[in-house]
Image (cartoon, rainbow, N blue to C red; front, side, top):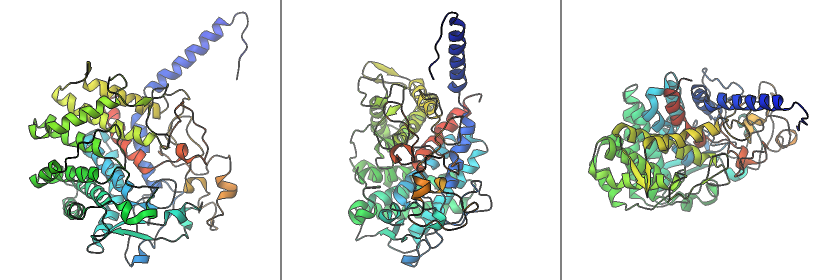
Length: 492
C-alpha cells in the first residue's frame, strides 16, 4: 500500500515511524519462554505410533501401527522426519542427540519445559531401543520406502504405502547411522540418569553396544542402502564425523579412557564451517572442548582450538569468515532448508559462549578479539530473526507471533484431520484440492520451524516450495537449547 502525503505530512510520517520503531522494540525482545514451549510441542505433531492420552496436538491420531511387520519385528514409534511419513533414523538420532544436549546444558533454565523435553527424547529413545535390540547383530535404521511415500500426499493415519524396513549389519555396515544412534542413546542416558536410573542404564548399555558395532564394522550406510536413504539423507560427509561424535558422547557418559584413545586415533581434523544432521565435526569439537575449558584438561586443547577455528569461520566480522549473511542478518549456508544450519550452529554459539563465560575465556580470530558476548550476541540475532525480528516481520515458527507461515509443506497439517474428515484420503487424493490449494493449512502444527527465507530475506509461504516451507525435527531440536538459554537470561 502506498500513501500519498501532501502538506502537513510530517506528523503522519512521525507517527508512522514511531509506530514502526514501537513494533521493533516489541519484537526485539521475543517471548523466548513461549517459543520454547511451542518448539517442544511441535514434536507431538511428528509422532508415529500409538498416541498417549496426554497428546496435545489433537488433530493427529495413531499411525504406523504395523511398522516392522515386514521384518517380523515391532518397530512402532519414533518420529516422522519432516513433512512426510517416513522414519529415517539418521536424522532422527541427530534430533535426539541435540534435544538431549539441550536438556543437559540448559535444563536448569527450562523450568516446566524440562519434563516436555524428556518426553520428546523418550519418544525417540524407546523406538531406538527396539531398533538396536530386537534382532541380534542388526540395527534397524528406517521404516517406509521414501521413493513411494514421496509420490503420495496422504495423512500418516491413512498410510497405505509399503512400510519397508531397512537395517545395517556386519555385512552391510553403517558406521554413520550407528555412531549417531550411539550418540543419541548415550546423551539421553545422562538426561535420565537421576530421574529414571534403570532406563538410563539400559540406554547406556545399548549405546555402548551400538558404538562397538559402528567402530568394528566400518562403512557408510549410504553404500549399504542406496536409494532407500539417498538422496534424502545420504551420509555426504562420510562416517568419520559420526565415529568422533559417538565416541565423544560415550566418553562424556562413561569417562572411559578407551573412547578418548579411539577418538584421538581417528585423526579427524578436517576444518568445517557447518554443523548438521550430516556433518558432526563442529559439534563434537565443542562438546570435547568443554573438558579443556571447564576442567582445564590439556588433553582436549586441540579440540578447543578446532572449535575456535570453527567460530572464526562463522563470525561475520572475523578475517577468516566463510559464512554469508542476508541483508537482514540471517546466517545463510545453503538454499535448501537453511534454518537447519542456523539453529544447529546457533546451539554451538550459545554453548561455547557459556563455556567461555564460566572460565572468563577469550580467543582471537586474527586481530579480532572474541568474547563470550560476541558469540552470544550473534546467537541472539539468529534466534530473534527466526522469531520475527527480520525484514518481513515474519516469525518462522508456526503459531508463534502474529505473522507466521500458514501453508507449510506437511501432509498432516495440510489435510483435514480424521475428526473433520473420517473418510480415508488415498495416495493421490490429497493433491487436489489440498496440496495445490492456496488456502492456509487446516491444522496448525504449533512450534514447527520451516526451512526459512531465501538469501534475499524473502519467503513466499508456498506449500509446494519444500526448500523453504517444510519443517523438520532437526531444525527444532537444535533451537530448544538456545531458546531455554535466552528465556532463562531475560525478563520475558
